[in-house]
Structure formats: C-alpha cells, structure tokens
Image 1 (cartoon, helix red, strand yellow):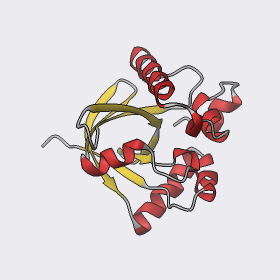
Image 2 (spheres, rainbow, N blue to C red; image 1 turned 60 degrees about the vertical axis):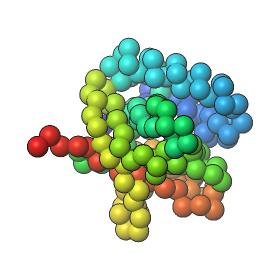
Image 3 (cartoon, one colour; image 1 turned 180 degrees about the horizontal axis):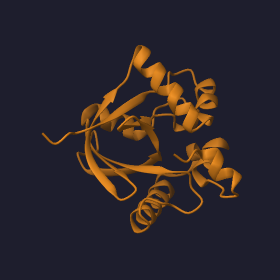
Image 4 (spheres, rainbow, N blue to C red; image 1 turned 90 degrees about the vertical axis):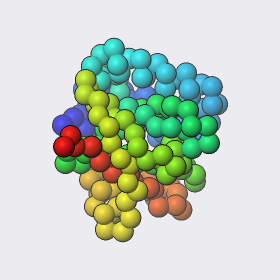
Length: 166
C-alpha cells in the first residue's frame, strides 16, 4: 500500500492535498471543480488507476440524491480489509461533501481501484465502528486528523462494502 507521505517524499506533489490543506477546495467554483474531477477521472481510467502527482485514489460512482443522475468522485484510497472507506472530510469544512447525501439516498455504488471495478454498498459507520475506521484512515492519510480538528462536525466515514458473487 502506498501512503500519501511516500508519494510526497518522492517529490510528487499531490494537488488534492494542496487544495484541501490550503482551504482552496471550498473556494473553487462548482464548474472548476467539475472540470478538475473530469480530468482526474479521465487520467485515472487511462492509466490503470494512477493519476500523475496524486496520492492513490479510488473512483466512487453514485447517483445524485436529488437528480438521480450518475456522479463520479475521485477520493483518497483507504483500503479496509477487502473493502474501502470513503471519508467525508471535505478538508475539514463545516459541511459534508456533496457525495455524502448521495450515499445516504442511494447506497448502491460502484468503486474503481486501479483496473478493478466492483459494486458495493455504502454503509455509514457510527460509534466504535466509525472510530476504528477513522483511525485507519488517518494512518493512510494523516491530514484527516487535522481536518477533524478544524470542524465541529464529526467527519462521516462510509464503509464501501464489496458485493460478493454468490
């Protein structure tokens, strides 16, 4: 597993971390954010899940809570056993990211990791489950701890539970 620190130490600046760390993500207008995400998704798919100068990512495909339309979000890759975590940090902003409501409304999602694509169910974790998962997320991407300190809300964590073929 590649941690974000390893990527940074090899001189590969991580654009998402820069944006979140400096609080610019919150200031990006919606169109700029959509265009950036589209470029990241395109590069991810063209390069077997790798995006130049970014830490490891997953692509999370959801349905819009209000529109029902397909939405694709690049997220930090946080492996959790055979599954993945989706950490709704939004860089420590006071509100949840847009995809948070999508997962509550439509928990059936698609996850892309490298060249693998699988169906999953998003489960909002609470209590000890959430605490353990968030602790794991911090070991993968240490800034999550700082994001939690920046906000009054408890940062939500979803388990993206892989569907098994029976």
